[in-house]
Structures are given as C-alpha cells and as structure tokens.
Length: 263
Image (cartoon, rainbow, N blue to C red):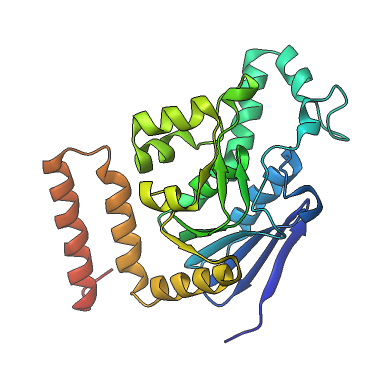
C-alpha cells in the first residue's frame, strides 16, 4: 500500500489519494464545515484532479459536524471577500444568476460519475447544503449522532444544489416533501429506516465503517462495478424493455472482456 498523496488543500477542502481510494475532507471544523462559493470551487477542482486509478471516493467532514450547510455570511450585504453577495447576485440578470448557481452545482454533480463509487461518511449535522452534499454521493455511512435537515424552505429558498432528485429517489415524493417543507431533523434511526443511510454505526466507528465499505466495493472487478452503476442509475428513467436491452448489452461487454475478446 502506498502512502497517501495530497493533491489539494484549499478553501476548506483537502483531497488525498491512496491507491484506488480518494478522500475528500471538508476542513472548516471551527465553522462546522459551513460551505461557501470558494469551497464549492475547491470541491469541483477535487473532482477534476481525481487520478484515473481512483475507484472509490470517501467524503468526510473534519470535527463534530459533517457540514452545517451554507455559511450565513453569504446572505449579508458584504458577503465573502472577493465574492458577490447573494443579495448582489439576486439584483443581477436572470441569466447571470442562473449561470452562477449552475457553477455552484458543479461541486455536487461529479460524485455520481459511473467510473467511481462515492461514499459519504456523515456525523453530526448535515444541514441544507451539507445534506445535499451527502445526497450527492452514491452511498452514506452515518454515525449514530447524525442529524439531517433541509432548511432551505424555512429560509424562503429551495434546495438547489442537486439534492431534490436523490432525496425523492431514496425516500419517495411524500416524505421528501415533508422533510423539505418542515425543515425538521431526520435522526440516525429514521435515516436508516427510510433509506437515507446505508449503515449507521457509533461515532467512533464511522471512519472504519467507511473504509470497510470502500474495501468491499474494491473487491469486485472495476469494470463490473462501473457497468452495474450505470445500469442502476439509468433504470429510473428507462422502461422495462429498454432496461433489459441495456442489461444484455452490458453483459455482452462483460462476457467478451472475460473471454479476452474485449477491445
């Protein structure tokens, strides 16, 4: 096993790679890993910097909370140094505002790429943007102190960082609406019961549980995992016959590869 290699450490985001596993760490523990546009740019850059050898990405938060959501400084008139405040953005054109939000969303989209499996190791608070970042990952391992909440609606906003589709996919429309409209906390037992958490463990076992899950994913051949992930992700939008055709095509590729006939 090689030593971990640091590829990025900026704006509250640290990326390290060890063999086939990358670890992305939110590193603003004093602010409970509250998020900012600078952090979102760093998260986007982390996805761009992933070596092709990486098969699993573990996302974690330093300190007691995974992420307490958006840094409230974004809503102050002064905003962040060198950044337009959200109030200034709202006063601009619709096209500029749309483009800015699209840029923010890029930090939340690459986790679902077919060539990797992403695992969020979530402890403490995962609120708003923190909840959506956990939802961006394929799998979630949670500590027994986890508290998910979607507070955007309570603030007069909507979840806009890619979290609505995976939330509905995991818990269904009615429960997703209730969680978002009320802004209430979803604790560990409920998170596991409704499918938000793949696994719940004691806080002091969270890191080891994420490592064990990563090792289990790595135990299967890479191409088989990539093909399977693509099949499962597409199953939501395909009809039954179309999905069966996709399964046949994927299995044909796998069989040809195992027979040494692949390209």
